[in-house]
Structures are given as C-alpha cells and as structure tokens.
Image (cartoon, rainbow, N blue to C red; front, top):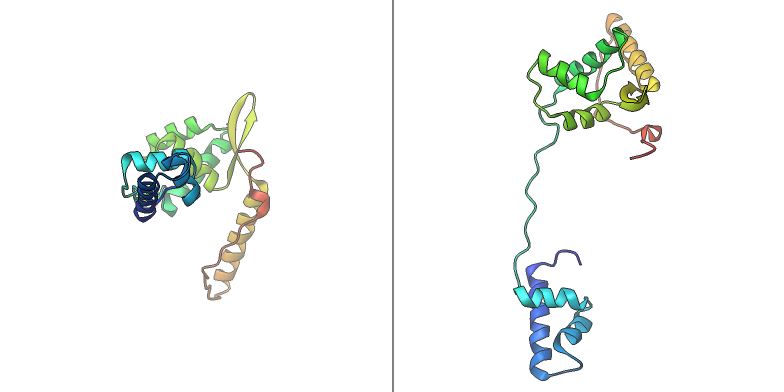
Length: 175
C-alpha cells in the first residue's frame, strides 16, 4: 500500500463505520476492504490509528551543492597527479590528499559518488579498487579543449548553449 492521503483514510473509516453499523457480510474489516479495494491489513491499520495526514518529504539539499567547478577540477587534478607519480589511487588515498590540500567539504562516501559523477570508474587492480577514467571521455575532453583553444586564438566568438546529452555506453554494467 502506498501512502494514502487524509481524505482517502476518512473514506475508509466511513465505509468501515457503515459496514459495522449495518452488520454486513463476514466482518466489518473484510467487507470494508472489499468495498474500497484494499487489503484487510491496510484497512485495519487505517481504522486502528484513524485518519492522519501523511508525512511530507522534506526538501533535500542537493548532494553536491558545495561542488563547484573549482572543486571538481581540484579532484580531477588530484587523481591525475597520482597517475603522474605512477600510483593507482584509491578513494581513501584521494580523500586523504584532498584533506591535506584543502578543507574538503565531503565525506569519503560522497567523494566516491562525486568521482563517479565526474566520469571516473572503479576497477580492481592488484586486489585493490582503483579509480580510472574512461579513455573515451579523456579523449573527448582533450579534443574539446584543443578545439576551444584554437577557436579562441583565431578570434572566433564562442557561444555556449544549455544543451546536454548522455552517452548510453557510460552506464555501469553492475551496480
């Protein structure tokens, strides 16, 4: 049973009261359940506690609201620095490095999700989960930045549109 609004709960209670006062069928809960099309358990739960207003969902703050472009670039540069030094970083190592570099506003689990959002993937290497970025994404970014640089140097005006798209090949196979 999903969440029933207060009006629906009042109707269930009214049907139950009508069936009980007129002594219809096998039992008031069974007959009320048949009349409203819900299970006996759902009807008995509503009748026992009475009609109540369902809890409203709180407005959740955006998970990555503190992650501006600077933070995302800092994370990306930190991961690349590990690779420059010949290391395959884990989330814990990146988290510790970010804590030393700046006051990183997230916890380790949120960093993991932010890394996934940035296009990094997790692979098992030497029995450790390490972070790798898709080579396609790296190539696309490299081509885009080179094209952008050449267009700017040629004096062309660049207009950014609010258009996004999603590549269906970037969906994780397991998850």
